[in-house]
Length: 219
Image 1: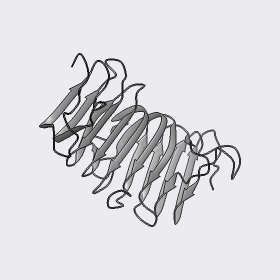
Image 2 (image 1 turned 45 degrees about the vertical axis):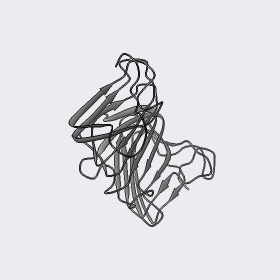
Image 3 (image 1 turned 90 degrees about the vertical axis):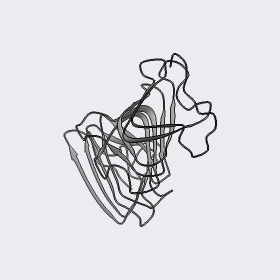
């Protein structure tokens, strides 16, 4: 579209259905007037980065297997009634945006194939709104975390970042689940324990590793 792409009504029924679905909006985004409901049985691709970097809001009706959802400097919200997976776990971002919000109601995030995400402002991921399934995300670049939750005493979380893992919401648990594995290249949290930029967690078992520079500061 030379403009935006919206649904007539956001009613939980697919507005766009196909095997591979490709959406490109040059101006004013995708799903901004009314969230777009999409069923893509093979692959979902959505792009505003080729235009004005406007926000993308898509409800996946059924599983979401992502090729590339790219809002550039805009925000991405992908809310699936099923799972959210990548087409291939190849170290190249499948989802790109400033603030990236991922919600999967059934069978988790990155369980079929790990989801590669670049979120320059904040990454949020949620299966607690559904079945508390596991979450596996590779952060491509630095990974500023809002809340990644698989539910209290729920699923497991694995976050592997090619950059630092940082906290963006002082005073709120950023990693919530049963077991969590965090791997970074540049540090996990920063500052001092109980400070504004330490990474707060609420898990039963925590495994953290860091390569190269940067500290590990977790509460």
